Amino acid sequence: MPVSPSAPWIPLGAGVAAILGIYAPVVPAMVAEWAAFPNLSHGFAIPFIAAYLIWARRERIAREALGSSPLGLPLVVLGLAALALGSLGGEPFLARVSLPVMLLGTVLFLAGARVARHVWAGIGFLLFMIPLPYLMLKSLTYQFQLVDAGASARALSWLGVPVFQEGVFLHLPGVTLEVASVCSSVPAIAALTALGAAYGQMRPRPTWLRAALIVAAAPLGFLSNIVRITLTAVSVYYFGPVALDNVIHKFNGTTVFLMTVVLLVALDAVMLRLATRHRPR
Amino acid sequence: MSLRGRLAILLGLIGATAVAIGVAPGVREGQWGAGLDALPTEVAGWTSTAGAPEWALPVDPNEKAAVRRTYRRAGQVLWVSVALFAREDDPKRRGSIDRIFPEANTSRIDRVAIPVILNGAAPVRLPAVVGYKQGGPLAVVYWRQLGRRVYGGDYRYRLALMREILFRRQADAMLVRLGIPAESGGALEDALSLVSEIAPPLYAALAPIATSSRAERGHP
Image (tube, rainbow over all chains, first blue to last red; front, side):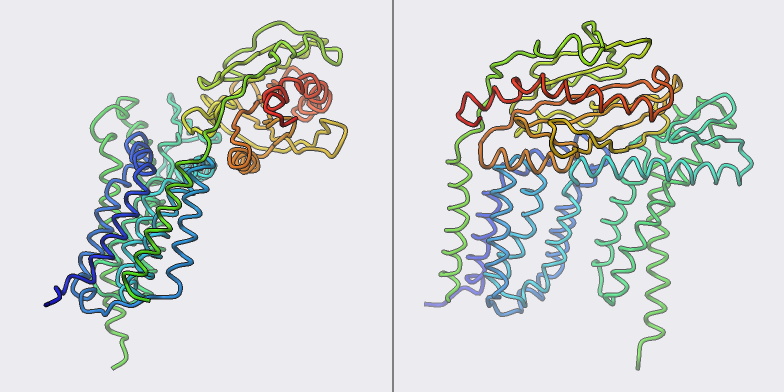
């Protein structure tokens, strides 16, 4: 009887389906957090980008012969243990972070290292959808609020805007602005780092260039947020508090985010050209 | 091993995990046999009245029960809040770290740790969150209790809570907060020094509440 070429993939599909089944109770609360907190809303895009990263390599995956890696089973056991501990111990982060571990372990166990080589980036990208534990996020956010306020105050001084920084407050003549938690650089850095990681995987690049794009995304995200806060403060200084309520302020974050994406793409183009020029012949 | 064999192992492991999660006994809610009226009205020369300002010690909607008192002594004032939280295994019922100390209109928040001997044994480092507001700094010193065990650090508490949930299937906790306005006690260091004076007798007075929930289940 002829065997369908897709037959070996059916067990892998069954394994992934079983994983999705056991993680079904874990996902809804995470999705609710993406919806509730604007800082985490990029989480909605992550599974689709991860799926695309794997789909884009489907032809290379299909060419690989299935095997099994000795690393697979320990990773599966580790992932399931973390899921059980997190679910029974009331620690959702642990349960959530075990999902990519389980998926990678399953691919290694059922399909082998040659297939895993093509899908690990897509699976690893799922880590960006998992919100940090709130304790950690809160502490990190506050530290960035202070740094953002300090950097913005310095930028405002350079621009000739009189400003007095007091912690997270920026006192301008006649008005005080607060660099609140939603204004901190953490969301921009989180979103842009995810974007840098995905962008780096979109087409063939040297590994060092992929790593450079991820590393560069964090300072670019920080810089974009400083520009955003500074522009807001400058507009408030010249036009009054009405500048906080208009469309320019509301879309300020989006504009600066898009500008940063353009910077990231430009940086990639420059580095790619340099890499091509210095490639050994 | 064949692919089918590996799949069978994977499905077996997933099934076993699902069963382990599914059949684990549920976390039960404590009865809190002793009441919060155990919080003394007089302690270490301080006399108190009921209530404490919410701007200093915010109310958490997840509190199952709470008592707040304002203590005064020779022109000094401090506020105490004791709140009981049940079923902290459920993140939706957990005490929020956003409501431990007031953050609104606060220009800067510093964190320091104060070593305090609560039960005559080794000192516990209690976190003091100092918020700088227009009216002067406000320090909120707090600790959490699982039974009689005291946790100052947030991460240590979460680890202990996880252990409590996993091995005792209990998740009832107590949060004790002391709000100290610095201007009433002079310098901030002086204000914080009041903690080592008032915290130990408070801890001793609250011990029956902390232990009542687990004593009923045979975990004295």
